[in-house]
Image (cartoon, rainbow over all chains, first blue to last red; front, top):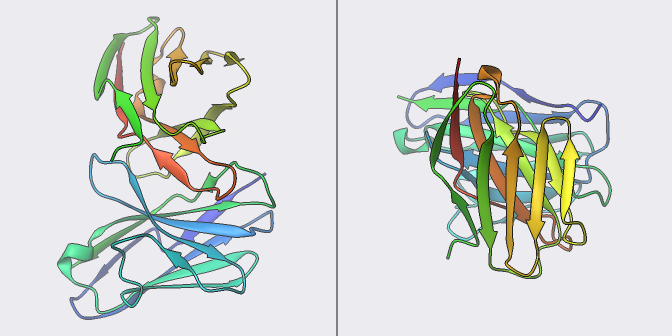
Length: 115
Length: 112
């Protein structure tokens, strides 16, 4: 149980285009989902926290107009990278928790390459 | 300010040996300490977690030792196997906001 999926697993796009990444909790309802960014050989950096039906809370330094997060249901959160540039190329990972449990279940990640 | 310090950055162990990774935290409000294992190109997977009211927790070959007074905790991997080769992250969480603070990670290589 507690499976989180992401789609797509990897995406290549041209500079200036927008890319949407989906995060789904497959077998539980996720009250809260998190979006992380990870550069090669580095740790995970929290970008934002999203709760179903409410606006996402962004970490300091993360541009909310560039990284649009929508948590439309208890099983789906989306991250849209708007007007992507090469510096946005990274590994994006989502995680989800159920109820008031502390355990975060992570998705497999999405590799974004902006040309 | 790095709230969770992890060491070593990399570790090489022979098959069958013990791998030890250490973490130290500063914020005494942290009340949940998980360890995650991450293989290249994959998301992190929860290995084992501990709360500060317990000094040790063991699950199979993985053991967390926790020293509340020193604000330190460590992961021990007994009988290390080549399949354990991965990056390990310690983390800490303050239950009220569910945000994980990660260490910088340890790249473990287990030689056959």
